[in-house]
Length: 181
Image (cartoon, rainbow, N blue to C red; front, side, top):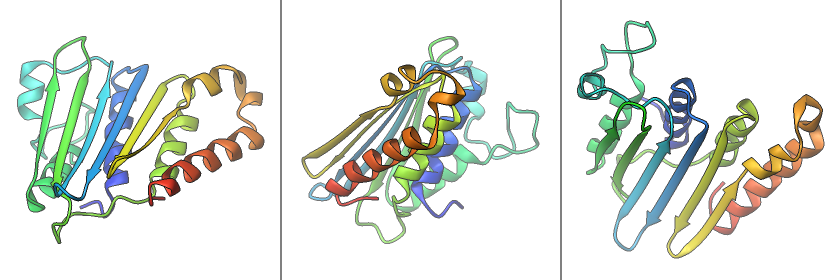
């Protein structure tokens, strides 16, 4: 099992990119008062057929030519163990949406940390993909859209240390305002 929910988010977003997504939205909503944590990753990739969707939570099924596909089954298990559930909406050519809900205060809920590092990894690992992030925590909201910034800095020279440092700092500062890292 992955010990941090940010690693599940990284896995789902990487799967979206592998499925040809050019836009990936990551939405996190923490509502301590209602005891709910919701994570939603939406993409515009290839989507899934009914057959693939029906097997998406089978740990012995993978579309990548491997013997196993553990990402979604492990996330589903983590959600269920903490009083929540996982749902997937997808259709061929229309992308996919993965939603995981957790009881926020459940003792078995994995922590949500390292989001700044996860987002930076996605943004700089796939500069041709538009990543949008919205994180809501108890009424406070942090939004980040890395796409315009990277589009203004095309090519490898544009992804220099100065840009990487400023994006990381912006992500950390936004999450810190929410009490997250």
